[in-house]
Each structure stands twice: as C-alpha cells, then as structure tokens.
Length: 186
Image 1 (cartoon, rainbow, N blue to C red):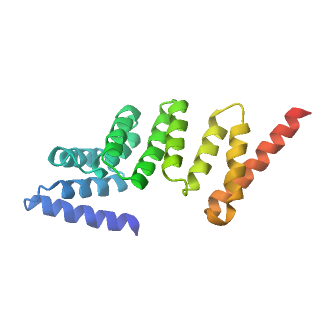
Image 2: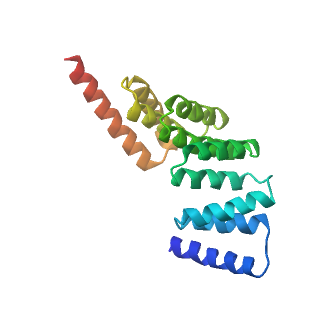
Image 3: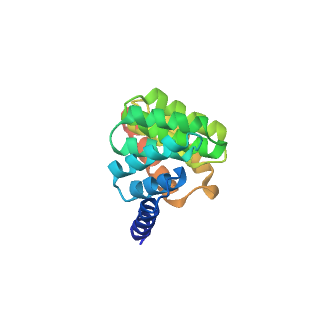
C-alpha cells in the first residue's frame, strides 16, 4: 500500500514537471518518492535538480545523503548530510546526525559514527532511541563490550518511554553480553 502511494505521488510529480513545473519542491518531492521506490539513480537526478534550483532547503541534501548512502557512496552521503545540518533545525539535525552515523559506520569510521550519535543525543536528550543505536554500534564493532552494556542498561532503565521492539532487542543483547562476560571470567 505504501509503495503504491509513492508510485502515485511520483506519477503526479512527473506529470507536473511535464506540464512545466520546475520548482525545487516538485523536484525534491519526486526525488524523495523515487528514493522510497528504491529508484536511487532517478531520485539522485531529481534531487540534484532541486538543489540546483534552491540551495536553502535542508530536506534536499538530507535526501541526497540517503540516496548516496543507498548507492554505496558514504563520502558523498556524509557531505550531503553535513550540508543538511547547516540548513536545519535541532530535531532534524539530530535525525541527520543519526543517518550520518550510519554512513560513517559504512566507511568504517567508528570514531565519527559514535561522535555523530553523541552529538545527536546532546541536541535531543529526549530521543531515547539514540541510546539504543549507540549501544548497538558499540556492540557490533568494539571488542570491549562494557560501553555497549552500559548504554543498553541505560536504555532499559527508561523502559516505559521506549519502543517495545527496541526494548526486547536491548534486553536480549544485554543478557547475551552478560553471559559472554560470565563465561570469559571462568
């Protein structure tokens, strides 16, 4: 159903462009629709056209960052996300930083990946999901799992305010980390 709505939206934006609409918003909306339809090359074309028309809108470089990420171009992705940050507001900046963290992780730049999440956490301390993402980043990539355990524990303490699926994952990973630690100690 969701894909069908994106397809319908893309068809409408395409028709609008064919009738002469050349606004940045239309190009951006078509690019975003194509991104969600997993047509990254087409999304890239229209998002770049949007950026050429209007360089003041933060959503365009944000979607460009997502497209570059999907196309396996983390350097371009980070560059686009950095531009989105300069044009953005606080909550949106935190979302962009989270996506930048993913791009840094893809680049194997774990220091910057962690720094991006921590910066997002400082901007939006109410976003409990960032603790989960930080814990899972440490869990996936660091030999010393004490930081992962610490952030999973902090996330779990906030249980009433967090998403249930993430909570289940955090509890399961924390249990597994404690078992690993127990067996290593013996």
